[in-house]
Structure formats: structure tokens, C-alpha cells
Image (cartoon, rainbow, N blue to C red; front, top):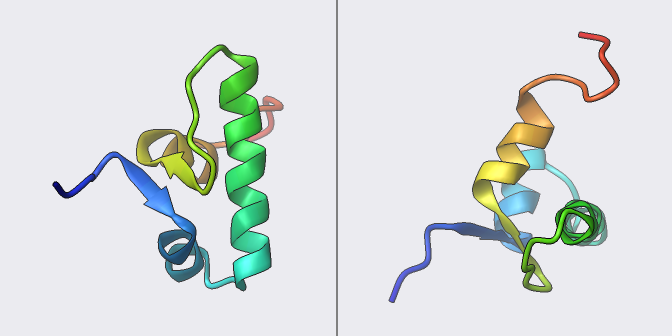
Length: 64
């Protein structure tokens, strides 16, 4: 069964144009944020919706 809900490290590497270690770092950071909010997370994968929200929809500190 194909899972279209999550990105894995290869997806993050392709989207961000970064190396594997940075991609894993991004996944860990986003999953840490989600876990702090009480969401279930999977190591090595990040929710696509949350990834796009954090990467592309503006800054969280109020500066746009």
C-alpha cells in the first residue's frame, strides 16, 4: 500500500536539495515539534502537510 501522507529522507533531500544528514535533522526537528503538540510521529518520516506548512507558509515569529 502506497503511503502519500509522509515524506521520508529521500523526499526531503530532493525537495530541499540537501544532504542526508541535514534531511534527517529537518525530520527530527519537525517531528519534535509535532510530538510536543501531542501528535503521533514516526521516526524517519514527517507529515507532508506539516512539512509544507513550516517550510513555505511564512515565519512563526510574526515577521513575514
